[in-house]
Length: 314
Image 1 (cartoon, one colour):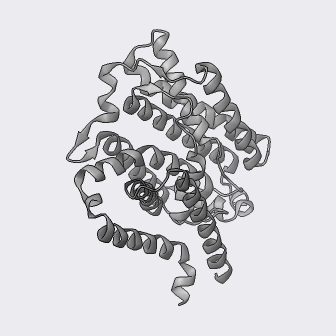
Image 2: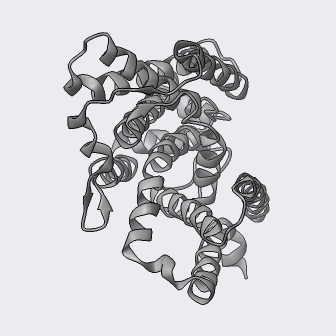
């Protein structure tokens, strides 16, 4: 019983996976087809990258959160398409999206780490700023014209696995796992998330590290923006809608403590796949997509309650 209370969020994640598998096996076994697996992984690619960045921000503590990730994805995709229209070589498109996302994330980090503004307020403001810019630059319309040679980067499939999932998501999570568990940087992130004051006293550069983490979160959002371009064939100014809610839910459901200092990226990976699988199952069952956001919101509340209860027990 004590184990369950200490690891309540992890148990909730396992329970949801088992429950979903049972429901699908009984009511809709065709969801286990390779085609459905490809669809789930394709939709999970963008969310997984954004959720990884969100998880790193939360893990670093300091009431860290990034509500601007959805606007970052949209604006990075729009910036890449506008650069293409301006004559930029198509091969530089990934670099432009990554750089744009990194700079947008770095701006969040500067306001938070240097000016000491509350992260919730900063990223809420930049969310509206980035989303508004994406709409203003495009007039609210999708910008088509992605070169044909870019499309395989977002639509290619290898043995039922989407190529962007193989060359972006898996390497990103593996690198993050290695850094967090086997490098000094990773120990610093856990330390500052667990107790920022103590981390400063032992010489950890908390301000610079937090600035870098917000930049990395932005870069991952920029990478997601590039994948949306290569997948959809156009830059859509609203492509990042609801990613802030879903990425935060994936990070917390994956075991990241809301106040930082505890968690791992493996759980975030599993939680991301679970969220996408739930949404895909709801579509297959004919449930209105409006209910998907409600389900994600309920999961977020459940995770917060579970995290609070297990933290109190510890």
